[in-house]
Image 1 (spheres, rainbow, N blue to C red):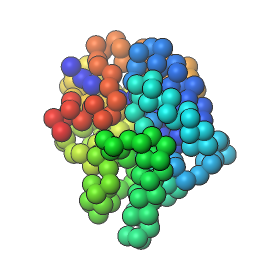
Image 2 (image 1 turned 180 degrees about the vertical axis):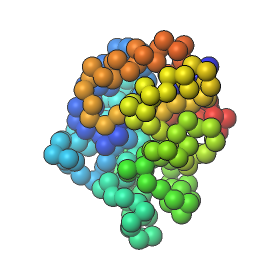
Image 3 (image 1 turned 60 degrees about the vertical axis):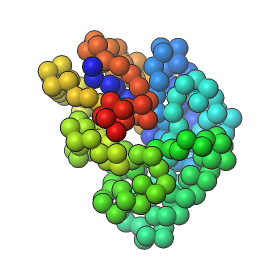
Length: 205
């Protein structure tokens, strides 16, 4: 059976409302949060309401890092890269007291071998975006593939015939009706919804 992980990047405050909707639908999701900004793209971030982040966990969702200030990691110095990772982990630990570790979604999906190696020192997995490993045909702990919903609907036969082990669908600030429509579409394929942490097991990682 194909596993599906619904992801939300950036950590917008509105994601809390989406989390409640998914909870009522019995769909676990993973929320990757920018930890060092109050706003991004002119929209409030959930890090300004840490009590809501705790509620995400209580609802059965997963919380991960989207770095501290959402920089393109391929453009920063080694020391800046370490700071983005370390400060993000420190903030999440302070909010959640999580001793089991966190995953990271690289901003813009941008990464390289050096970034993945450094991420392995801080995080339990890393998620990318774009063409690279989009369907997770290669099990890679620090380059788990993810795609926007527009790519998913382009290839329905890929889901139906190839039956990938894990599909990661990434949302940012799309409307709630599109999220519900996407989940309804995916349910037609007899899939299992998981957090991305759980999705690692679907890949044998």
